[in-house]
Image (cartoon, rainbow, N blue to C red; front, side):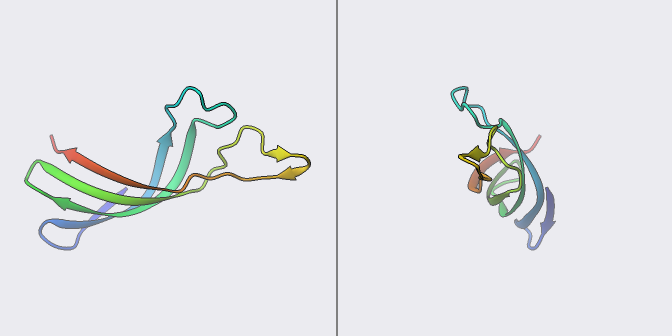
Amino acid sequence: MAKVNVAEKFSILAGPQLDLLLDEDADGIKKFGIGLGAGLAYDITDKFIIDARYVLGLSNRLEDNNFGGVEVDTKFNYVQFGLGYKF
């Protein structure tokens, strides 16, 4: 994702995002997905940051999307909150 600083400690995040489903019991759901994300980040200190993002899913996550002759697309849209440490 791209990061643009809009103030000394605030920045805007935007761009493509990859995700991986770690649940082993997710039968019929693809583990890998692609989405577009946008969000905000705040630098708490020089080393710690917090951020919040909304991700719009672009890829179909069902293994078999045909239900009784009707094709169904399932995409994961989600809100993500994070705490990060800068090395």
